[in-house]
Amino acid sequence: MDEIARNPYARHNNVAPLQGTLYYRLRVGDWRIVYEIQGEKLIVQDANEIRARIERGEEETIPASLMRALVNSERPLRLWREYRGLTLQTLADRVGISKSYLSQIESGNRNGSTKVMKRIAAELNVSLDEIV
Image (tube, rainbow, N blue to C red; front, side):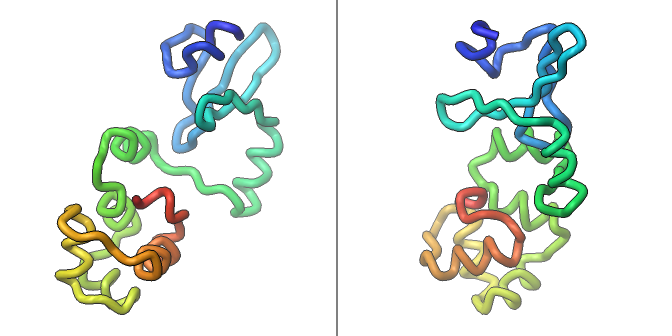
């Protein structure tokens, strides 16, 4: 556990990412520990509680491919928009901005106002942190 706490992203034989989540599973004998990384802290979660939150719709799972893309991308807004199956025009209309303004925000050529970014996040059903 100390080795994982020092470098939680390193490959370990008993650690596996939980597909579509920010969580990892650690296998120690018969025990299964689920943890996530928040900043520099390793946060241990109860796997049953996480599963229950997913079933209640309080947590969303996403494909591992999207998670990898989000980790490696400088344009999370575009990834979330495409994952939700929205065109630039559709999202712009829902948010009440022009398609060109949204395109400029997505490409990083223009910063969206806090108000606009909050509306975009709400339409995509993600936190503001997830799209900036």
